[in-house]
Image (cartoon, rainbow, N blue to C red; front, side, top):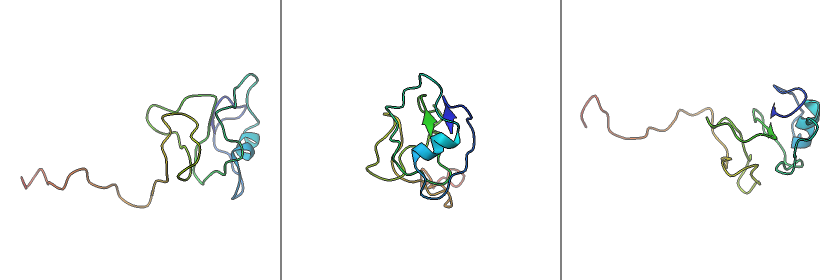
Length: 100
């Protein structure tokens, strides 16, 4: 949980929890925080970061929607899931050391 909440940081919620549950676990939003961009009914995934009242981080650490078709919190939010157990795909099939 990051952004304009009373207790930002790691929060634990049960499986099937929603953004509203995560927000409550972080002590709620700070006074005056606009929650219109958040879908409070959306289910959250394990390891997901929910940003409240702030734009997504420039380094891409904002974890947006869990699945395709989920409403994004902002225009820069990534869509879909990321498989953290597989190595990254190579950007090129050429091996610079071999010249091939």
